[in-house]
Image: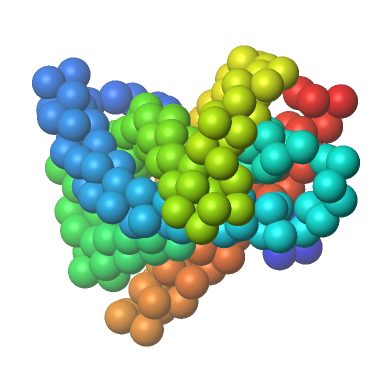
Length: 246
C-alpha cells in the first residue's frame, strides 16, 4: 500500500512542479545555474569513469576472444556497441543518480526542514515549480550531452587500451568501430537518458520535498532518492529496450 501512496503523492507533486510558472527571466537564470551545478560539475566523474570502462570493456573482450578465426576488429565492434547501447546511457545515469540525486534530495530536504519552503508558500510562490522545475529542465537538457561525451571518451579509452597493450591493433579497432554502424543506437541512448534524467531529478526532488524532521531525516531522504532513482532507471531501461529495440 505504501507503494501506491507514494505513486499518488508523486503524481500530485509532478502536477505542482509543472503548475503555475514563475517569471521567465528568473526561471531562465535558475535553469542556467542548475545546468552548471548538476551537469558541468559532473563532467569530471563521467569522463574518468568512461575512459576506464572503455578500456576495461576492450581488454576483457580481447582476452575472451581466443579463437584465431575471429578477427581482431570484432573487439572494436563489441566495445562500440556496449558503450553506445548500455554503458554511456544506463551506467552513467546510475552514477549521476548517486551524485546528482543525493545532491538534489539533500538540498531540497534541508530547505524543507529549515522551513524555507514554507516561507516561499507564504510569499505566494509555488515552491515545487520554483525549486524543482529548473532542476528537471536542466537535467533533461544537459544529460544527453554528458552521454555523448561519455561515448566519445569511452571509445577513445578502449582504443588507447587496445593500442598500448598490443591486444588490438589501432587499425583493426578503428575498422571495428566503423563496421556495420547503426546510427539509431545513438538516438536510442539519447531517448533513454532523457527519461532517466527526468527520473533522477523528479524522484530525488520528491523525496527531498516531503522530508520531515531534522538532519537525520535529510540523510535518509537522500538515501531513498538514490535507491528509488536507481531502481526506476533499471526498470525503465528494460521497458525502453523492449519498446525501441524489439
